[in-house]
Length: 327
Image 1 (cartoon, rainbow, N blue to C red):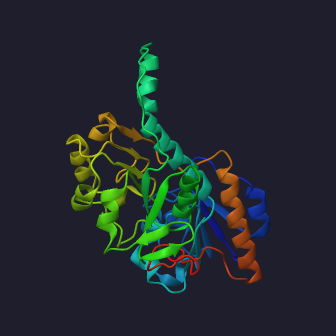
Image 2: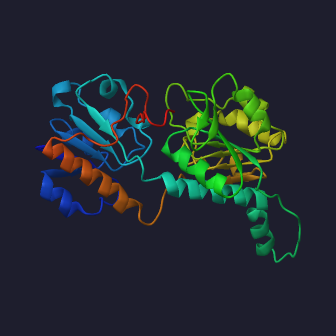
Image 3: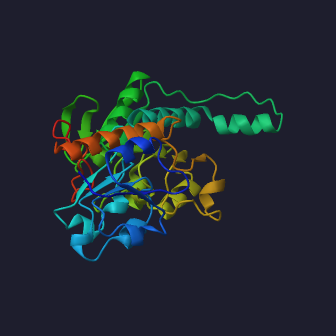
């Protein structure tokens, strides 16, 4: 049983704090307080996950570092710093499973909004302009989902259900995947890019995926295709994306994540035609906080009882490895 759990929060504490406090000695820390409260703690619940505070507060003495860190998120790129990754005694877990279906629904909404030009319709409404015009369909359109983890799989299943032609891109190429059918590896990725009407990014941000959508990849995409990013901003070379959008090679993009968040007001992306911007909310729902706590409480109970934890992250790869569904 952890003698002391530190909960990192910003603004509001997690719900169900009484349940957490009933299981272990619990201390709450803001990002400013974390350097003083983290050393000597046995476990850390990172309710705030996109922050440099954990790296900056991590004890220099490994004996003072927590043995278990739980991220209340699917992405764990903020946690992959050497002191944590290189310490074999630190177990990192995440909230895998909470964001799968909400993100898939969001992606479907973004694709429909791009195809039907809902932003344009809204602008016409605001100006009280009656402007009938045709729009694109999505049935039969080709989608490449880059990232074959649980979120990518949920996206693939939902897009298939509405009649889109879906394939995947991942580390291991295969032709018999239950959700994607064909998964492209490095050798066939370029040909898949030339055929896709939509490229959806749902990969984790790791050393291998950082900047993977660069100028050559964007140039290989089908003219008039659209990019949807619900993974991490660091997956994309934003300057190259801006150049390709400005040149008209891509019809548009729906971007939920960015290299710098919040997206700076001076970014050209705000005003580019065909670009939709949302503030990293693809997986958020009104029940998200309760679902995140439920996952953590299950793991806390497992930890106390000495049972294996759920959602253990492979710290070298940067994600939870699922042997039944290879990435």
